[in-house]
Length: 168
Picture 1 (tube, rainbow, N blue to C red):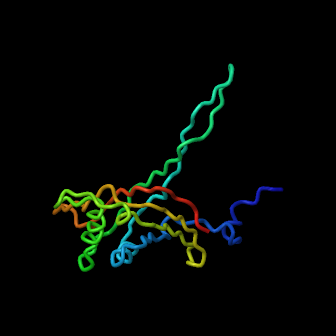
Picture 2 (tube, rainbow, N blue to C red):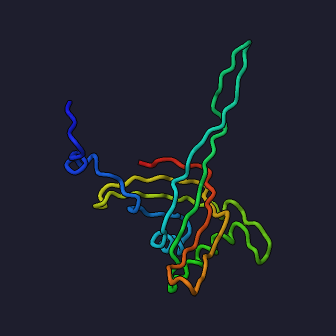
Picture 3 (cartoon, rainbow, N blue to C red):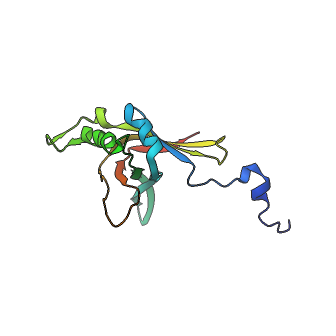
């Protein structure tokens, strides 16, 4: 087969490149905040999966086997909106985990949510979903204010994830 260049990227729909800016984040069971967050997310990282290993010895030989899967959540960054008060909506979820006003921790059954990261093709017809289970915020950063820069205000949070897998 001869070298054919990159024309198949433009002529074969199977090779349409997935864009990094065609996505949504859906957090179920957050009632009123879920739609606000879906519209405001600026960036998110698909959780990575890693395994630890342990060694098994027999005689003079050692083999390694996989143990203890771990899912690394990551940051969600959202654009704040004045009229929707996304800052308060996300903060309310964080206070279900830990309420700084009372000093009390919440119940996991109340604050752990299901989060879906949905990627779309450029025309919106094809989607790929990652289902993240047992999600909750472990940090809440309401953003920076500055007279020197009239940029958008961003809210960020680190999300803990129990499990994450493709849902096709």
